[in-house]
Image (cartoon, rainbow, N blue to C red; front, side):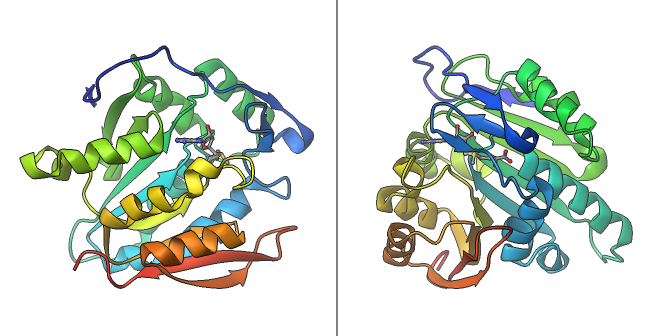
Length: 265
Ligand SMILES: C[S@@+](CC[C@H](N)C(=O)[O-])C[C@H]1O[C@@H](n2cnc3c(N)ncnc32)[C@H](O)[C@@H]1O
């Protein structure tokens, strides 16, 4: 386990405020929005974020694969990714050792107690115990801060930037010349854009944020999101992503996927 505080701590931790609502889905009272689909969070995560980025298929091609996520929330996407990754490692006849680095950005950490309630109520979540086991080691001691956990047996590294995502990206990019940043954040191969709805949380969908995301995306890096809001499409295009629509999950008819041919060149 590695953990390091690298951002100047400034404030008390702004813990998430939520209630567990319909279908046991957490609901943020800060953003007035659900954390994941009421039609099934696990299947949504697979459909939108993993399949939307052509995963697990692409793991075969990259020995070291990096995922970036806006909004760790209840870590359900991390959990679903981890389970798929484990299956991939067990079935892959890969000539080299594969590694996955999952990097997430989160402004409002959920307390361990609340996370236990979320996963207790959702007993159907296979492997949730894994998240509950490691979560205390990932939680911030100071704010903003950065935590990194290596799970060597599973060839998995998890990094969490606790704080405002825009500021964390600015910090990462500002340290780019002194060789600290590359060791913390290699370029991202696939983005899970999972902020709350753009109308309620514009900060995670702004052109300023996407222009920084572009700077740490690998060549032909991809993204996927459940949102097809006009502003999101325009801001992604402006940042340099080629985007297209796919069939959405549950009651969402459509979703967006994107690729960045101009990144990392
Ligand atoms: C829809 S939820 C994410 C759900 C999550 N991926 C999961 O698996 O449960 C959106 C998350 O974005 C976080 N968030 C909102 N604004 C943010 C910001 N400006 N910077 C970082 N995180 C932010 C919220 O606190 C919330 O946890």
